[in-house]
Image 1 (cartoon, rainbow, N blue to C red):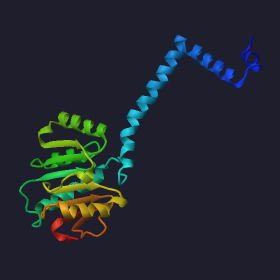
Image 2 (image 1 turned 60 degrees about the horizontal axis):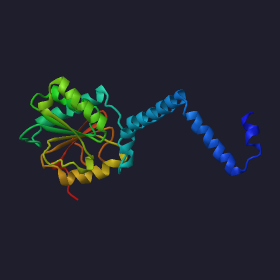
Image 3 (image 1 turned 180 degrees about the horizontal axis):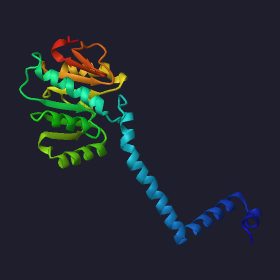
Image 4 (image 1 turned 180 degrees about the vertical axis):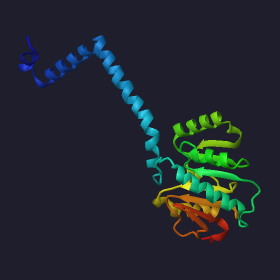
Length: 219
């Protein structure tokens, strides 16, 4: 007897029960059980891999992970060197923080270029934080670097001499307000891809701009 004939004279409720019974019977098959388990594992795995990359989009501003290019990093390091030699930034140390550090490539490039520098990376994506820590161990710079999972809006910047930000246009004005209150007077800021909208620029290289906190007026 085929399935369509068997359901033909049943009520709606009877048809529903019969259909659920057939589904239960099909899941009893070892092959079907394996297929269901494999599908479930695949869905959960995809969710775990993708969710950290989507989480930042739920914050106040979207800061997507877009790796810095070699030329962008070189521009940042060139501006760091200018700031180190400036009379506006008489520092007690060379402490750098990268806001939205991704895989840590800017931090590692700075540590390689400037042997006396220490650096911190702040990143919302936990997988990238773990990867950066692993890279720091591989490169032998764990004693000069730290990577943490934090929301950049909640990070205190007062203890840093260099602030690096690869931002998006929508966040730059809010970032100005935060830095006006957080930064020490001698701090230098290097913004890449997008400039700070109202701050006075000291130097620029390509799409990277150097600012000194001492040049800016408080709100």
